[in-house]
Image (cartoon, rainbow, N blue to C red):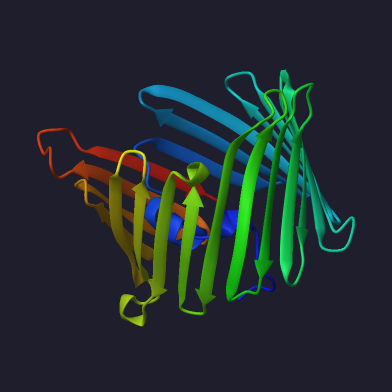
Amino acid sequence: MSKGPGLFSDFGKKAKDLLNKDYSPDQKITIYSSSFSGVALTSNVANKGGLSSGDVGARYKYENAEFDVKLETESNIVTTLSVTDFLPSTKAIASIKLPDYNSGKFEVQYLHQHASFTGALGLNKSPTVDFSAAIGTPSIAFGAEATYITASGEFAKYNTGVSLTKPDSNASVILADKGDSIRFSYLRNLNQLNGGAVVGEMSRRFSTNENTLTVGCSYVVDPQTLLKAKLNNHGNLGALVQHELMPKSFLTISGAFDTKALQNTPKFGLALSLKP
């Protein structure tokens, strides 16, 4: 396990990734490459709902600094500069999405053995301020996050939670949406699944009395093949298979079905990630 409590945004992340990561109804191809100068290149082409889009990105690392730039088909240019350990245990991130000059953002992350803090400020006339904090140990941590809109003088969100972590399991409780919803999640790694895991997540929205229970699992068929499945109490079933074609190159096929409306057409997604 890692040192310190980690960031608040990581509370329940393993369970969330098992239930959501790589599930997609879209078609996407990603190609990674690198140059002799150390620049890593990424090209993406995607079809989302019948609309095609793409982007080309480059990443360059030098000592403790990293510079990213991405050109999108919508004529946007996204740039990010991050510097690690410019102060002990501190990381700074500056980003902007051109041509929107009001999209600039500056973020600072501080990770300590018993606490972590993040603060982000929009670089415009009426900035939005995001901040979070977590205290504890790698085994148990308490945290909170909030977003403050300076233009209106109001909080757009504030969440709080607790995370419990063991070598083979992880549990979290998050009170979110200004106290209007609560989410419990539990993940456990099982040797019976060849290194896979089972997960359960229950959420409740108090204003509508709506409850959602989702269960899922992952199963390692062999070192190159992973199966995942999930189902919630609303009848939504998802499944995927991911196969490593060659080292660091993956083919993922996913599907989503509404078991309470079988007359509807199932959704299928395909993602191909190639890294020569």
